[in-house]
Image (cartoon, rainbow, N blue to C red; front, side, top):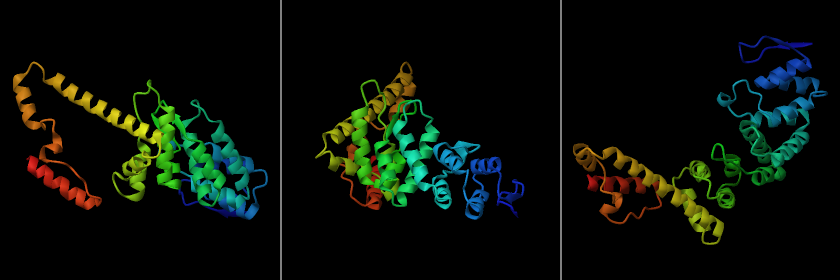
Length: 278
């Protein structure tokens, strides 16, 4: 029997081999003792617990705990059950629907993303084909993982997916995948430029851009309408408000806004335009 402690001082010392219940508890808490167990004692009788941990996030405070995709992948690899974990994840993602737990869905894709980074084309395909529009939150489940795996190709594919899925009853147009790509390559507006180029060849991408622009115009119109309603009946406030706000022409009041490619040059140009407006 071998004894030891985890890095977490709140956890009591342990002895190897772990009992099944102790292994399950440590697995839910993300404790390193599970690695010691599988490396020194094997995973006989415990593979089902590892598979379950890949399928469902059992962190005690899920929104506050960092993703464990890489941790689960490495544990499955050490335990010799990576194939079983991948099979279960691919099946689960394919069977999800609107009733599926959102955080479990995100957890599954996080594990799959790290399996895909280890060279699994099947895991990568599961993420791509497993895109799911969650209408309750207005998000696309799997967009982050797909963009981080496939880059610009994912931006186009997700936009085409949304063009097919969204309908007249949807009052929002998800665009998180655009921001994820801009963050990934560290350049604002990059995803938009990718889509504008792709729209020349893809009618679905063109449709998505139209929906995105219509949504932005509607939000801008509602914002200005709300401001106008607040100002009605108070001439003094209206006068002050007119002085504080742009006339409606915005930056166009200074001429055309032809942004250069460099983010630094773009920043300098916008600053110059703002100074002219003032």
